[in-house]
Length: 521
Picture 1 (cartoon, rainbow, N blue to C red):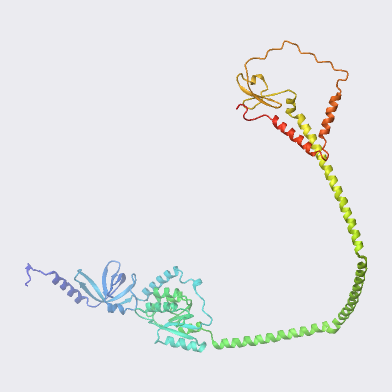
Picture 2 (cartoon, rainbow, N blue to C red):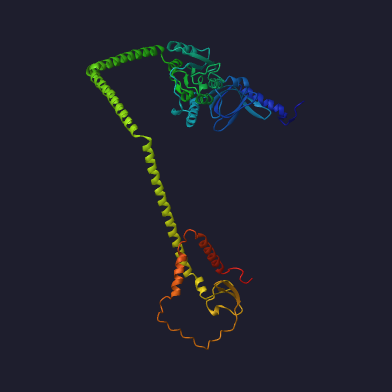
């Protein structure tokens, strides 16, 4: 297709113009080195890495293909200052230019050290470097686990030093110690050793050694990754860090339970010297034997001195044995004499005991018991008679003060319909109902309204008292005597009649009691 021109300006399609721009950029910037700070860093599922390089005024997009990203010695992170090498190109689909990166390196040691210090502050703030969380190393471990490269000189140095000092069972977990992906494998090795079950087919180490030889900061950078530092901090097995030489310092050195300047020194920290232990045991054994011998000799000398002061046993026990023999002889004679006296006393008492004597004593006792029983019976009858007379006297007193005696003399009680006493005429309302109680019973009455007629006759004067006034007559004396006889307790044979009279009196008294209910039925 011929290009149309408007004046001197040629006409392009979009693709043609985009291709021309791409060729112009690639021809002029075929190989460039760009220094800047990493901005956005994105790892795609395909393995490609997309990032931004920026400074104070501009931003350039960059891309690293999967093969290049796998060869990187460090993991690109946001904020890291780097130097990227590659060529400039364009991405026609979005009309933007980008840097296709062939290599990426930190912008000098200063950038890596700044990142190292930043991570160090972060982990220290979380308490991973605290001394109180560090675990003590076992004095003599049975199994030692080593995380290192199986082909380097480090493992040979560790095994050689362990063989010289104290041979132990060593388990090596082979892993990368440099390059891309080494940090993940080191962390997996530490976690794998901790995941071993005690008593399993693979023995669980008592101490771990993470070791690597010397190198540059970039070579040791995998030990500065957070994943390695956090795995070392979370290890339940005591861990010794032996990375690089004495002047090399990594983050794992701060979180480890013990830092060794070299892998050989880590082996020395892990086990003691067997020869020194043997010499120490022999020395302690010799000192123990000497101390035991001195103690036995001191005790023997003390025993000999004490034996001299004690004297011979026969001299100490002779007098006591003689006193014991004499006491035994006296005891035997005393027992014999006591037995003879007891037999004589028994014979004497037995002679005094006969049937007639016992019968006489029994008869005397029986007579005494009968006499005492007669006295008890007489006393009981007297007490009963006295109590009966007292009861009769109290009954007479009760009758004399009772209102029934007043009724017997001709008086009467007037009660209203509620059973209350009527003491005044005004309390008996005309037409009201009530009751009059006599000595032998009660009658219902109705109160009238007529006033009683005044008596016109004058009361008769009392008959003058006779000459013997104030003295009881013969008939009164006889009635008093009869009452006293009735109050006395009845003799034998008269109990029945007395009790019958008492029952009759009780019936009469019961009949004299006023009816409290049913007076007006």
